Image 1 (spheres, rainbow, N blue to C red):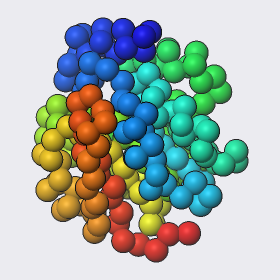
Image 2: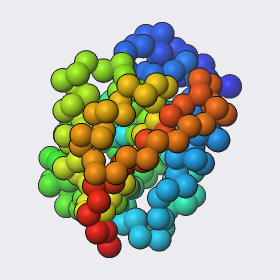
Image 3: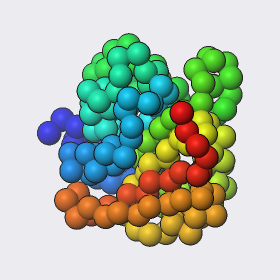
Image 4: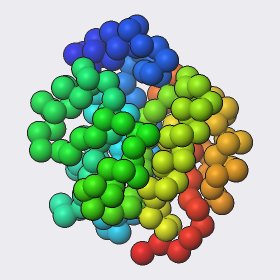
Length: 187
């Protein structure tokens, strides 16, 4: 209930940056994360974790030695995430992924999992973040995101060689999941 209230307050304060009035369901979370090869994922980045609906599952599934970074811009969500998941590395700007990777030496991501509401973003911001995602992915890496419409599908198809779209009605609202790969051979 506490996550719902925080999410609702943040949505009302900034509906263009918070895509829903409630956190993602466990059904959406499990469906999105099912494509990740956890044994081969050395670097995992989560964009827009909000209250941590995916974060908890990722921490349970990832290898203990895998590097994991949250990227959350909203200061209230950042504070909540820091309390809930102490010790997890956190960056605050998705438009700076390449810079963060260079500065930290973390390496390119095998999986980037996104809860960002791309449909709410101006085209320039959406394009800038997707440029960063593409540059931050390791060869053969996965970019997985969900949206509440098919609006993003055409843009993702111009950026990635393979885009698989699935749907889960077991979320409020129901969501489309995009699993994107560049087609390069991974690890």
